[in-house]
Length: 379
Image (cartoon, rainbow, N blue to C red; front, side, top):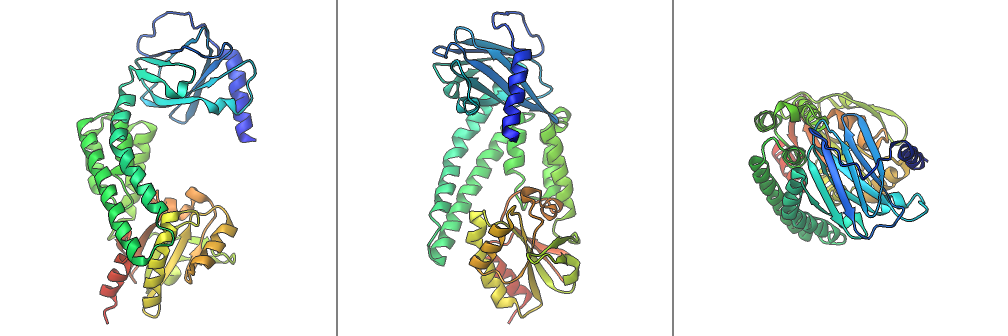
């Protein structure tokens, strides 16, 4: 229903905001998007959407003789989408059937295509060309990682360890390539976007990230919505970095009982962030089970914090993977309050806490958890 309402609103906007594409007036200081779809349907309509601060901006124009133009002004470079409606009637699914994603900025941008805008060529958008440049280098590496995860099911523990090592090498390569791109494109919105995505992984150093953030990006970029979210992520990370006291929390178990982290004060505790729908989490679970079974009779406990939205899926995964420790969730998916409190933006992730409630390690994957506990609980 929300989706339908969104499209109805766009339709109303189209009736009140369509423009004359033959207008050749200049747009000094703003953006002008000139597009030519040489074989576009006679009755096509183009819809432009992008986000500025907390608002979604939408505009629409009729496509006349395969051409249309948008004009306006953005406060800062941001991601945008143009969708093309074809034909004499416009069923709802047509709104998303033909779309082109790019970065909009205050410049003259030219799009050319034949019958479909999704394959358009773009000129005049520096940010879009920057994104294409870095994507050309990182997408093949990302595809290899996805393929490796897809082949994990049914493999032995030894094969999984080898696969993890290979995946990590690809991850490291992506970070290296991206870091080089960021350094070569200071004060670029695309570099800011990739800074958040690759320079601030779950185990990032917030002090180092803050230094680089301030050095690489000017005040204008820092005040964009993306810039503010990065600053907030750094602020939260500072509160949950190694050496800090773990933030207490309270959430419900599958049985509906309230559980407080502070109730385990005096024990070593692993707070494990995961979800039933997360393949890497499920692949990681056997390693966590191994560590738990080996040290459960020591002064050690695990609290699993699930980022699930479905209680049924959450409980089923606990049973299937044989996870016999404490489990909690508020079933708010990525808005899980504990995950937000700890700045968790990807799973699996974990935090190891000592008996005094101090964070002593983070993101122990594979055999690293058992090895760490082996140091804490020597034979």
